[in-house]
Length: 158
Image (cartoon, rainbow, N blue to C red; front, side):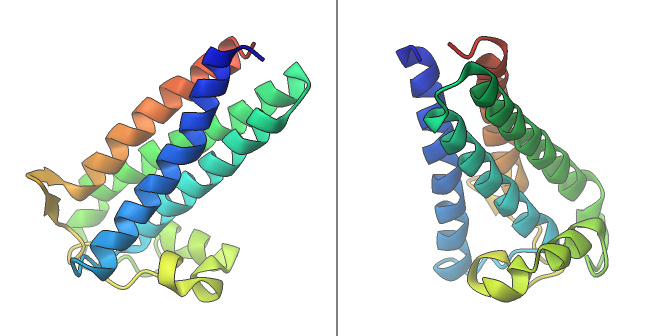
């Protein structure tokens, strides 16, 4: 694999994990409690990172492309979750039993790793700005960049 694809995939492994680390920092040091849509975006970042790592390690082109496609799907899921959080969920008083809440419950990650994947706030309470932008827009911007990188790897993986 040529180095541009390796660099893209390497970034797609590291950047989502940095985003989750930043979310955990704002949760535990700045008291910004996450809602169900927030933790669903964390899950999308983790899946994207793992799929990118898998693509980076794949020796065969078809497998690399399939793993990069999974990363692209995770990025698109994150874009959808961030947009839904901003335009729909933030207006509701509760995220209880929302699609995000049910998905996180289905994975069991909210009970297995509550420090990372448990929702501690309602969507309305989790509506905060970070440096003048809605919190979910930071996530949305990174998901868009990662989706573009994944699309590039899927389209030209060598």
